[in-house]
Image (cartoon, rainbow, N blue to C red; front, top):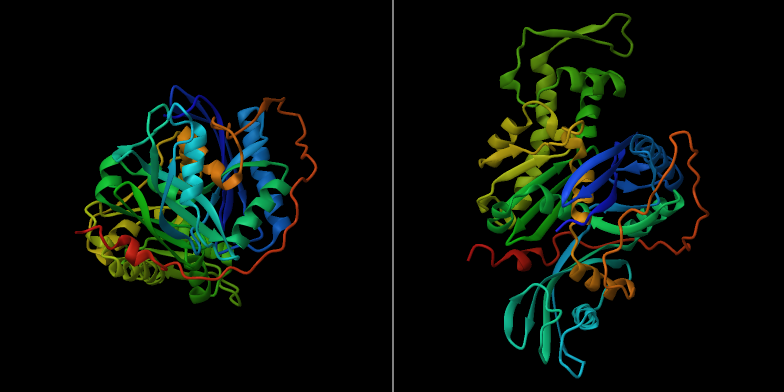
Length: 440
């Protein structure tokens, strides 16, 4: 159940940094502020220049503050799926209290027991999600607190990622003068927020086509089972147009937006438009069909790569089909092309919030929604990672009302520098074993 209060989400994307301020009243989300700033310092979804990324975050935050009329102090920030590993975990403890009533401390202890594992030095635990508890052999318990028992078991899922990526994200947020209240795995938030209960249970594929990369995720049995990142996205379509037509990147982006279609059969070879070509004094006429064929070639390649990794895990057998989202998914003809490539049911997800009815905002809205719905049991399990001794969900945003003219002032940095370690590993490690029992 969503909490009542303010929540702020931050999505650091390749093409833009987005901030959403949402107010929850009786579990109803009301978006009251939005910020959207052009990204700098980010390449293919990965932070490559901390200072430029900080500046982009601050611009987006200022926009959201002005529109919402509040000052943002803390955020939930999305973590990309690059080199994400998904593993099952299990822990068991004896209940300590004399009364044998299970307490917050017992939940923390059993989560700690589930995290007893060898984590490579270049990787870091991002989140642990309790799936169910067992008390003295009684299964299927979601929250064991207050129950009587001698033996407590927890079954859950652990997500780990490259320490370098996690460090850089936290560094940029805190250097922007903000507090990180939650680091949310973006594909996990996405699948949890945009899928119906039936789609989560029976299984659905979500493909997020961003500017710099495409993330393919599979959810089944209400768990994120698989993620794969392809380092191609909407910017590559623009680069292809620029290269083939010998025009500037900005002109190519405008052509894609104004005339682009990913499905050539929907276009006309007789409809032409002018293109400013480098080295030519006069614009050159290009027809819709030719532009569409350029776009189709790259989008088809993106979908084929997703199809190949999904075929390895029989992902396209999931009854929920494929759901597309992300900025590049809004291009006309993308759904038709995807339907042709995947040979299954494909649909486009578009947020229904007023002013944000564009797939480019799906991720940041999902981050806010996911954070607002985190349970106290999750927070207790999380404390096994962070070491915090709190039994209540911390507010995702600590804010105070300010005037629109009040200047944004960032507090002094408190983040302690640590040495970055190069992340290695394979996205598909252990995925097939993890996913193997889905279709039994």
